[in-house]
Image (cartoon, rainbow, N blue to C red; front, side):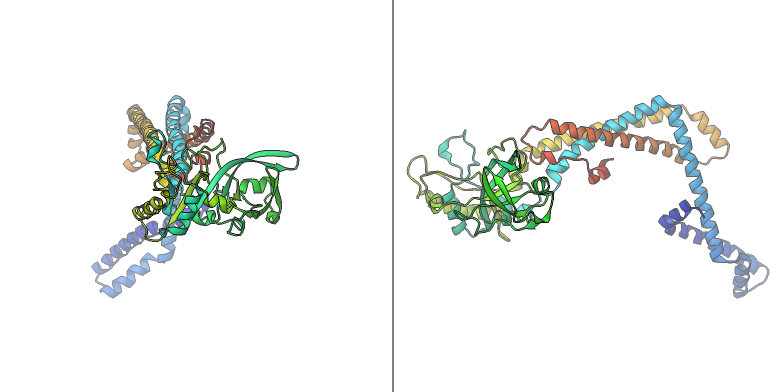
Length: 462
């Protein structure tokens, strides 16, 4: 028995075994009928039939191996004939493969973008429970967006007074200079309040995150670093914890390393905040505000955003009602004039991040999907036209004894070969298309830089 036969038997053994069992039962029944016709009773007829039939197991194995070997041999013949046909009709093959490849390449490229932006889950625990908290001010006029971050006094009062949230955190992003040896590199960083990582539900790969003891004035000389800078500066060593890193000429002690997917806040993740041309953040330091900064309402100082995690069973509407009541009380504490009139707004974090681009990306996905359908339709018409030109060949093969199934299998094999060649070309075009997309980044699509042709994308489209 050949290796291919053994593999085939292992994969399709149930289907083959069932068919062979039925066939051998038919043979036994015929032998029993013959024995009964010669005057034997049922018991004697059964014994006579089994004696004449011989070893059940031996016939079973030999028949199965012969059938499978014949099938594999025919499949090999079909593949060889299909390869000769593609070489003989090179013009048709090139047109068909190009059409399939362009269609699959376009769909795979755009689906890679949709997968990175919309389908892959955010690297946080239960992102559907995360919300942004804003303080719109109708007195500012319609030109001012409603996504205005709250002041630090409002944020800390929300932390003390609200019950709809498991935790709240605020942050302020900034581009910083990181000194490593003689080189200085500009990276994205964020100054965050204690509980920032816990609110997002993000756990470090190594070490720990920023806690309450770190978020105090004079205690903020610690930093949590991202996976990229961990490998670049510390060569991915586990003893990076406790090492020092010079950030804006100030020494920080590394206390944790975040996993590779984590990079919040990323470009386009916070409305109207500006990302300084940096796609993601690689450094997180404590905000470490003084008591005056936490309570002085005349300074009008705040971060770039406030993130909250809703409590179990708490809806967005319930959190909105509670925060509106709290903000109404706090607004009276602000100095009169334009520093009053603030309201509270609770919105879903995922809707805020992906809402502006969701419809656009799905429309783009639909457009390239239609391109693929048109390409498949054109290839189908070409194949039909080609078959009409091969009627004489098909008639000759049928006259030599080829059955309808064998003829159909040959045509399907040729179509499958074209599809495989077109799929391979499509993947190659998609790899180039994703690189081209990276050069066209408009800067307002979140997680755009994570676009890649990966295994799920290949399985889904190629």
